[in-house]
Image 1 (cartoon, rainbow, N blue to C red):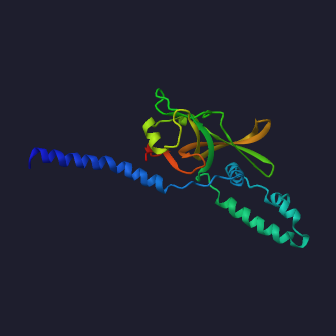
Image 2: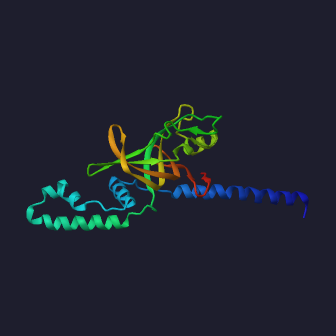
Image 3: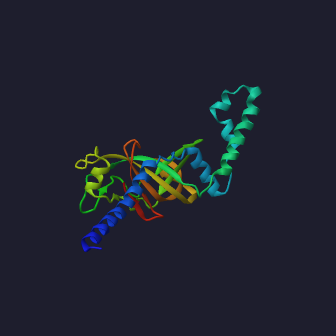
Length: 230
């Protein structure tokens, strides 16, 4: 076989193999859908479960507006129905399941020295607050500073988000997927002059979406230690 033909075949094979990871990543992003955010009820249940004691569900029901509006002859039936819901929910809550938060943050212009786009406000002071039945809880992402810069080239960003102003920056929506690992049951911490029970969680995946979660641009899963590129 002529040398020139061999070289040509080799070049085609290399080109195809280079395209495979990109094609796989494109399909991954095309099929990605936003995971619903974790709500305050779940966080309250999770905190109690990690603390090892069950909430006072009777008090929850009796203090609700729905219970107060229910006619007296129907209160017992309503109470039993809501208690069944709460007990079932509490049984299914697990620290193995992720906490998911969507938050809008500012993506700064491309920084060549940083090798990507810095995120404003991505520091150890960030927390996510929840309120349920008069209780206040705060989820603390303990490793958030690992995600201060989204390391993608300027050309990649222009290709993935052609409407994004890379010179001035802009708002994007971040989806944090976190694993809860510890709580503080000794005393609540004062945050904005309100006592919050603290729940620490480690970020294991961050999804970068265009503003409003319209289009996924980038995903980093810590367990896989790799980027999903489009």
